[in-house]
Image (cartoon, rainbow, N blue to C red; front, top):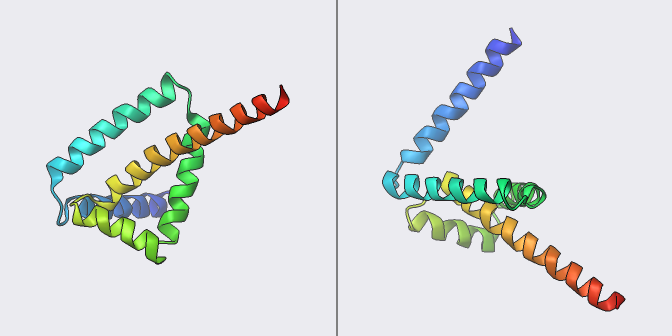
Length: 118
């Protein structure tokens, strides 16, 4: 019984996500961005081994969307909506960007620690 209920909830979620993806946006722009981001993310995860940074960015992206009523975050999300980019693609952009920012911050901190230890 619970499997049927979970299947219905997941199906409704995917339907709403699909409708959100094509509502009021340019679908070709969003599909192109999605394809590009998925290719870049898969290269990062497979070859560069940035899994821990993507986990950090997933958490921070969730926090950003939870705090979407805060003025600076509203401005950021408003920018993407005015650029005809759906929230789904905005999440992927934020995940990719935050992952690379966290990697750069981690490398910078480790370099400073190594220099200080010398």
